Length: 454
Image 1 (cartoon, helix red, strand yellow):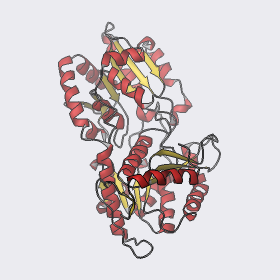
Image 2 (cartoon, rainbow, N blue to C red):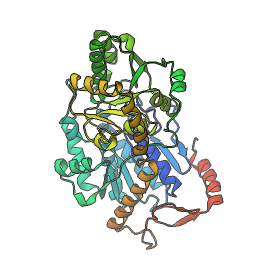
Image 3 (cartoon, one colour):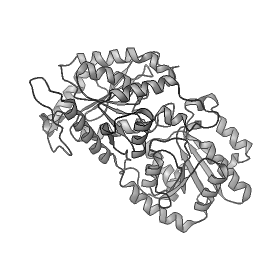
C-alpha cells in the first residue's frame, strides 16, 4: 500500500491525518488477519520515527525520507515524488523478484508512485482516490482555496492507468465516470467501515464525567479537522441561532480536532467566531482524541454534526452511529449512504444557518424521536465493518490480478483466496506459506532481520 502524504499511524484530526489514515491502517490489519501481508509506504515527517514500524502482525509501515521532515504542505509534495518513488523501488529491489503481488495506492499522489511501481514490477495497480479535486472545487466553502489544476490532471492520469479503482460509494463511482472518464467496468464499490468492537453504545453519564461535561446539557459534537472544508463554523453558527431564539436552552457545542489545511492560516478562527457570536461559554474545544477517548466523545453527545462541504464517505458518521448517537449531516457525497435520513439522523441540504438551526432544534426538542434514532443508528452502523471492507478489497484485488494476467516466477498463475484463510498464511498469489506456529516464528525472525520497531 502507498500512502504518501499521511501516515496511517498518525493521530487523526491533526494536520493531514483524517479518515484516510484510519482506512489504510484498519484495512491493512484486516487483510493481514486474512493471510495477506501488507507493507505500507509513507513519507517520514520526523527524524524520530524509525525506518520501519510494525503496525500489527503482518503489517509493516515503511517511513520513507523524501524531502525535509517539516515545513512541507501537502501541495508541495509533488516535488518529492521522485525521491519517494526511488526509495520504494529500492526497497523492492532488495527482495527476490515477485516480492509484491499488487500495489494499492491511496490518494492521487500515491497513485502517481503506484503507476510507476506497477509498470516496473509488472503487478496490478488498484487506486482509491478518497477525495477528488473536481468534486471539492465544485462545492468550496466561502473563502476556501480551490484544489490546483495539477492535482486534477494527476488524478486523471492515475484513473486512466489504474487496473481497478475502489470507490467508497455508488455516488463516488458515478463521479469517477462522469467527471474523470473512468471505465465503469473497472470500478468496485467497497464502503469503508468502523471498528465495531470499539465503537458501541455505552454509559452516557460516565462518558460525560470522564470528559468533564455536565450531565444535564444538550451536547452536539463535531469531530474532525478544523478547516473550511469540514465546516465546523456551520455548527457554531446554527447553535448561536438556536441560543438567540432561546437563551435558556442548555446547549453545548463540543469541537474535537485541530487546525488543518487552509484552517492553519487562521488557527483561532473558530474560537474568534464563537466570541463574535457571543457563545464562547457554550463551546468547548478538545484536541484530537485517541480511539479509546473518542468513543467517549460519541457516547457523551446527544448528536454528532458532520456539516462538511464534501465527504467521499464520512467515517465519523458511522462511528457515531455505532455508539448509538444520531447524526446531523450535510447532504453531500457519501454522507447520504452513511446516514439514513429520518431514521438514524437528518441530512440537511446546503449550509444555510437557518436550515441547520431548524434541523438541530427539531432533533434536540424531540427526545422520543432521538431515542428511536439511537437504536436504528446502531443497527445501520452494523452494516459497515472493516471486516466487510476487507472482503470487498480482496474481491477487487482478485479481479485486478485476473485481469492483469500476472504470472509469478516459475509459471505459477496467481489466484486470490476469497474470505477467511483458515490456519495457513498466504500471499495474494494464493501460495501457502506458514501454519500458525510457523507464522509466529517467522514474524520474530522477520522483525529482527528488518530492524522492525513494534
